[in-house]
Figure 1 (spheres, rainbow, N blue to C red):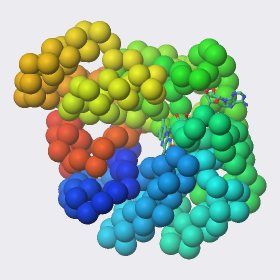
Figure 2: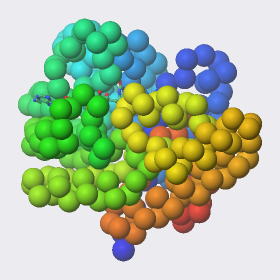
Figure 3: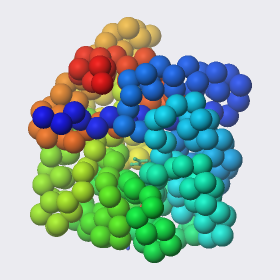
Figure 4: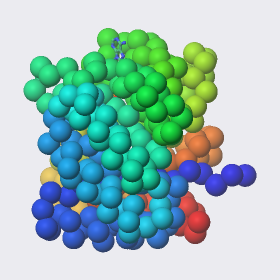
Length: 281
Ligand code: FAD
């Protein structure tokens, strides 16, 4: 059986302390020889140069492929195209193509939907880049219905995406159902689950509310109680067990790989990979 695809997502560090932490995490995670790592792109172009610097630094420090995230929230089409030219110059072969989070809710972006950016890249660059897109097993929060969101995902793949990474979720059934529904609509690209290690309650709860990921009540109540009691050890142990069991179910059920949202911390993803037997590649 083919080894599952393994990838790690980083965000561009903002200051010296974050840079030191990022480099430590990067080196520890690259030692697992992931298939690629990706680097997020902040809304409104605010971290554009930091994304570029981080991508370049990883590319120079290792032979591991780096996939920058690019989003429609660039200043204009010209700067977006220049960005792609720079990435091409330093050997980038894979991109994660997104609409991006809308900073003010007003600026619609260079394109309104990620599918338009996928189509533009395909038109100008042919098959030069492998394109990943985002998808949402629990459906995107702005979408009027799961069916509409699924159709838009299908359109994004039809525009030229080679693969998809999901928003994180804690319910394996919703992933399998989503994959079945996507296949029924003719989507045939790999759909890799995005995995969020659980290490903290407040941040996870806040982010889950905005991105529309559900924390099932039996998990939420326990995390909330340990957070209120200041019992970090129980929270982390339980969080690890929950996410590890989820990953096992996903891989056993045929998921083609795992994409870890590392938040620039190596420990939680390393422990999961080790327990899942993904540590010796
Ligand atoms: P789209 O595919 O454009 O979809 C956005 C919404 O529009 C959905 O509700 C969809 O159903 C709807 N839609 C799509 N097409 C149409 C249409 N033709 N007509 C009507 N409605 C339509 N954000 C960042 O800012 N930077 C990052 O680096 C980043 N990385 C991410 C990585 C992953 C793996 C994931 C899952 C998300 C990431 N995000 C990032 C968040 C992402 O930008 C947001 O979720 C954003 O709100 C939607 O992006 P999208 O690419 O899925 O958009």
